[in-house]
Amino acid sequence: MSGRIVGSAWWFFTLIIISSYTANLAAFLTVERMLTPIESADDLAKQTEIQYGTLNSGSTKDFFATSRIAVYQKMWQYMSLNPDVFVNSTADGVAKVRDSKGKYAFLLESTMNDYHNQKKPCNTMKVGGNLDSKGYGIATPLGSDLREDINLAVLQLRESGDLQKLQKKWWFDKGECNAEAEGKSSSQSALTLSNVAGIFYILIGGLGLSMFMSLIEFMYKSKVEQRKLKKYAASFRSKTRLSVRGAPERENGGYSYSAPSQIVNLEGYQAYCATSNTHTEV
Image 1: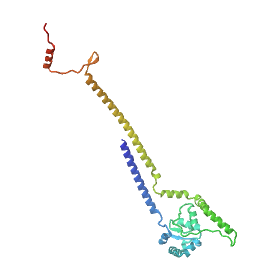
Image 2 (image 1 turned 180 degrees about the horizontal axis):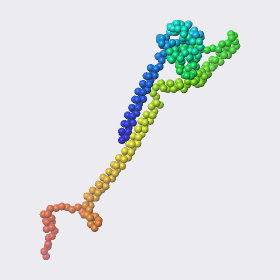
Image 3 (image 1 turned 30 degrees about the vertical axis):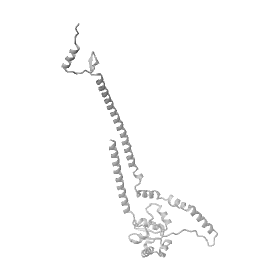
Image 4 (image 1 turned 45 degrees about the horizontal axis):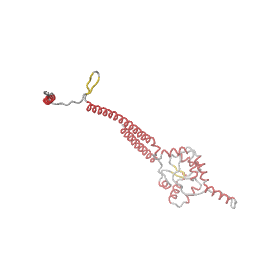
């Protein structure tokens, strides 16, 4: 019984594990097909199905216009030939992305990109890494005494990590899409132990039940063997008494034992009587 329980629990565990892996693999492959094929600026420049553009004026447009990198030059050439890809404000660019159903990519500064991706309806995302790296500065009049103090204060904030904490607080912690983003990332994550913990509990329960049944079977068989041993011992004692005392004879409601008799033939018995009944003469 315990062996059948162990076998059943193991095969059930194996079946669920294989089914879970197959279902997770199918879902993962489906999500992979649904994801955008654009992962970098190079992917964006190689295709023509998805349009892309920048603000009609600003640092991003100037970056593409003055770039000496072949990929960015190719992208600038495309945008120059299609002036309708430019927008007048960041809000217009974000709205164009949301209305295009995935057919328009808006190129903007990473800080603004992260900020708008945390705003509802939470249907935009950042694709790829940064095209270049630039920092922000605080402008002061020429020869201002505040310049040195501001520079030192900014350096101290950066080295202490306060700038990163402030960005996390106002961009992500107070964002409107944290829960949705976590839900999406968890739905596309790999199959982990927590996802299949229940089936391990079933396996452990099956092993525990089989051990309990094994203990019951052992105790039952031990009791049966003990009863058999008692019967054998009683039978052995009875046979021993018979061999020593002889067969019992019932007399007046009780039993009496007669000693074992010796069987002899008739001629021997007559010879014995003749020798024992001799008479002497006086």
